[in-house]
Image (cartoon, rainbow, N blue to C red; front, side):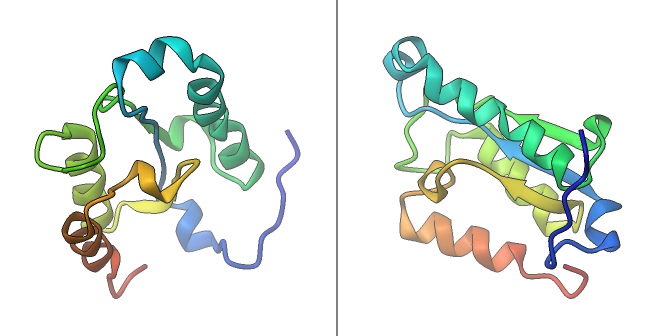
Length: 119
């Protein structure tokens, strides 16, 4: 696939991993809305088009079937926040921001963690 250029993506971002967060709120959605789940997984192609190698793309899908109402029991969300906080993420991809957190406390905690001097 031919790499796209995007003004916000710099070489320092491409040196880090691309994180793809995949989540559906309920197990019923996972089984009945397979096209939505597939669209989320297909974001890998977008990351490749933006310049990441396949081996740099980390898919976090351990929260499939779990509500976004709280981050407490979502291992994948916790992992994502940790990776961003440690400066390992060059990009985080998902179809909707609501996939990350619907609870404003969780969202603010995540966005504060994402701010780093090296980002």
